[in-house]
Amino acid sequence: MRVLLTGGAGDLGQFLCRSLTGMGHTPVVFDVRKTGEASDTAAMRALGVPSIEFIEGSVLHREQLNTVLKDIDVVVHLAAWHGIHEARKERDVYEFWDLNVGGTFNVFQAAAENGIKNIVFVSSTSVSERFGIYGHTKVLGEEIANVYAFRHGMNVIILRPRAFIPPWNQEVYSNFIEWARWFAQGGVHISDVAQSVVKSIELLVSTADGFEEPAPLCLPVDGAYEYSDEDLANWDAEGRGSTFRKRYAQFYDLALEMGLNPALKPTKLDISKTTKVLRYRPLYSMKTLLMELRQYGASGPYADRKP
Ligand SMILES: NC(=O)c1ccc[n+]([C@@H]2O[C@H](COP(=O)([O-])OP(=O)(O)OC[C@H]3O[C@@H](n4cnc5c(N)ncnc54)[C@H](O)[C@@H]3O)[C@@H](O)[C@H]2O)c1
Image (tube, rainbow, N blue to C red; front, side):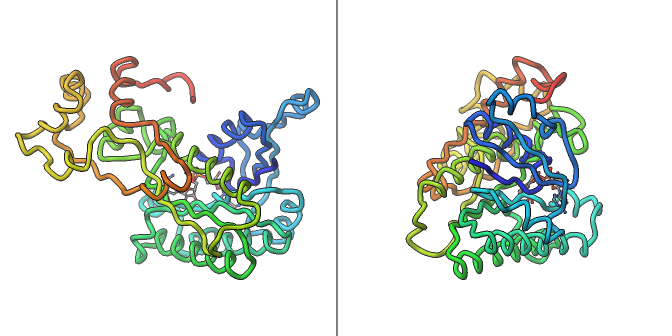
C-alpha cells in the first residue's frame, strides 16, 4: 500500500516511515525538506525491499499535489506549524493560516479530485484553545475534514494527540531528562502516536465500503498510565508524593535524584473511544520512563543515536 505522508520528513513522519516499511507498505514522503529517513533507496527497491519514496514539494502547490496523489491508497496529513512554533513566535499568523488551513484544504480537495477515500488528519488537543493561533487553525482543519467526509463520502479519521515532541528532538529538549520532566506531567510518547496512525490506516482500509455514518471519527490520543482514575481523584490523600510512592515505590529515590517531582499530578485524557474503535493500546508510561532512567541514567537511551 502506498501511504502519502504530507510533512513526512518531520518527527512523526520519520517515525511512521519505519513503522510502515516494517509492515511492507511504501511511505511516500511529501515535504519541503528531506531527511535521512527519506533518502533515495533505489537499491533496496531493486531488491524488492519495501522502501521510502521522497517527493520534494509543498502542500501549498496545488498542481504538484494533484500529481503526487495519482497513485496513493491512503493520505496521512501531517504538514503543519504547531504549538512550539506559536510559543516561540517562529511563525506568524499568516504562515499558520497558509500551511495549516490553506494546506489542509488543498490536500482534501486534491484527494477528492483523485478519488482518494481514505484520509488520516492529525489534529491536536489544542482544538480546545480555539482562540490561540495554532488551536484555531486545527479547529478549521477539522472543519475542512468534516465537510470533505460528507461532501465526497470520504473515510476520514481525525486524531487529536496531546504534545508528543520526542526526546531526541534537540531543537526542543536539550537532553533526555528535560524531556522526562515534561513527560511526567502526563504525556504521550511519539511511538504511541505512530501506533494510533497505523491503526487508523488499518481501520480505513478494512472499512472499504465506508463508515456507517458519513462523519469523521474524531479520536484523542494519550499515553499509557499506571495511575487509576481513583489514584488521580484522591491524589496524595496520604501526603505529598504518596500516590507516586504507591505505584512506583522502587523508583521513588531515583525520581528525586533525577529531579522529577513525585507530588506532580499528571493530567490524563479519556481515550476510551480510541482504544475501543482503533484497538489502540499505548505502551509508553511513567514506568517505562523510570526504567529507562534506571538503565541509562539522565542522558537516556538516545544519547548516541535516534531510535
Ligand atoms: N509535535 C507535537 O507535539 C504535536 C502534538 C499534537 C499534534 N501535532 C500535529 O502532528 C503533526 C505532525 O507533527 P510533527 O511533530 O511531526 O511536526 P514537525 O514540525 O516535526 O514536521 C512537520 C513537517 O511539515 C513539513 N512542512 C512544512 N511546510 C510544508 C509544506 N508547505 N508542504 C509540505 N510539508 C511541509 C516540515 O518540513 C516538517 O518536516 C502536525 O500536524 C502537528 O500539528 C503535533
